[in-house]
Amino acid sequence: MPVTLEQKQLCRVARRIYDCYRADGKYILDDGRLILCQSNARTEDLRRLYPCAEINPLGDWKVGSNVDTGATNRKLGSDMGDSVTGGWLHGKDLSKADVTVNIYTWLKAQATDTPVEISCAIGDRTVDGIPFGALVELARDYIQEVGGFEKFAEWGLIR
Image (cartoon, rainbow, N blue to C red; front, side):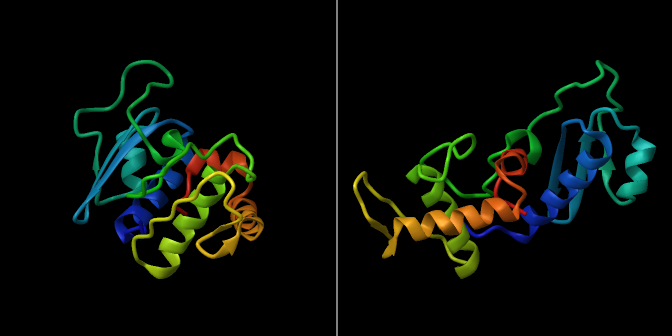
């Protein structure tokens, strides 16, 4: 699925906060309303980053040094926005069709700004009319662009 503007904005928020605090948080962006729930961060510090946000609406985190406040882009690592994939994408190599075809399909959805559905079967030499080797190269270029599989696993597809 094409990534929405809201999903892109929320990813930027998640990255900025994680870069400062290296701890998980939960972030909600709903019709311009930004809600931040962040462990290991004081409300006043977050308010300097996001003055208009609702921050830790239930109060500052008091338990543990690295509490789990919920899913974030960094924590999920396979954030696809609204996309649904047929395979887990991390910790595999690009010769695996579920990795390469999922990355290609996602990139095509972003380029065309339309939902894209692609399937393939063992033994297919082409996918979407493209030789599988060419798709591997497209996926490899994307993985290199985002900083390798480690960064890809950390943040997923949305940039």
